[in-house]
Length: 258
Length: 311
Image (cartoon, rainbow over all chains, first blue to last red; front, top):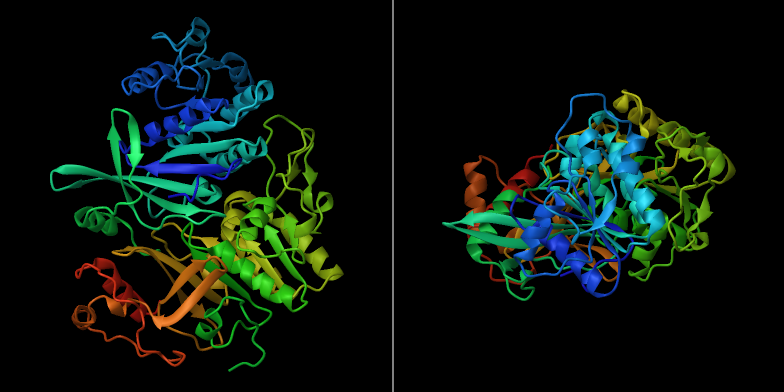
């Protein structure tokens, strides 16, 4: 569908409704990198890494080599918060294999640092200085935005974060929820491409499909394609068209930009 | 008709615009993501560059080295197009001295750009705001006479460069500056999937909108002229393709394939008949291949109605 794959060193967005398979797709992207002896980093905001590991294990993948940065917010302690700079020093990257059931360390229990886009950028900066990554997934930017408290500067922070990822020559996949069609989210127009996963009820069955909404600098598939999630992960049948019924459902949701 | 219009460089679009754009004014190209705004804007610059004009590309969101790489896929040589890299730096959240960008960065040619993205200097990131972009433009226009300028994108300018609360006032002043400079400007505006009119659309002298919708045949692309002051223009939605050579607008009408009868029924219901094609350049009989499309598609008829109703 992407005419060969993603262009390296650029940020991309995976969007979709809940349960559409965004995280699975992203982990497959990291897994592919690890198989080719690249370094891959997962930034976990939505789910604690231990849960991700369990979920992925049920698909039978060995994800031990994917590095993970746990930015899952810990339960808030309502005492004095530590400053942003200290966050970077506290959170560290572990491999997904190490993510035990009690991923939260003692230090973190004591101080619950504030997670924001800015602090993530600082953490990434430290991490990328230490080792070179070629693939990065942020799961998800939507949560990260909700955690960032000063809304005023969110746009600039996202711009800065994505810019930082591309300056570091890392191919990034940023996971977001399906955007509100009336609001223009900055990550959508900043990214160099958007892959959208759809899941809709057709009759009494959920049907999945995927579209490439945007892909700068490359030809891409213009048709929605059916998606299946099996025991071995997500697969896309790029030769088949989606059923007429689900096409109709899609059409009802894609409107003219007006 | 105003004589001496300038060509847009996109095949078919000039016919829709009754010959081209009126020089010295500001126009916008709007559309959702992935509709081809940057490509269309680049074709506008290339058209000028081919005829020996001085043209300037102001990069505000996509790093120019990537733009160049993307356009190379289309086989275009951007060598003679000048570029100002105004993409913001990575923010460092500690206190660092901030420099003014207009003194730090200069306009260069596309061919002089490095292959890699510009890396933020560790010590002092540059600070870009709408004011510094304006200053740069003023200085540049004094030194070199540009005839065509592309601002890509105006949306970034609004999102990342305006730090005051007076977004709209700053935008209006930016438009004012552009018309004072007397340069023909094409600015790109990114729209959300369901857009509401914004101050950019009011201020521009014309708006070319790129459309995209889903059809039984897949993703369809189209272009409409939403507004064009001082010139007659095509009021129909025309289909558009992004080919290996760039954007091409097809002048045969787009949506007549899909059960015309039903369309007309619907527009009658809505109490309006389809507008006759005013400037329709020799409205050719429909030559769109009859592809098997499901008969009751919601989108094409709504398109027709929307086109028939000028905003």
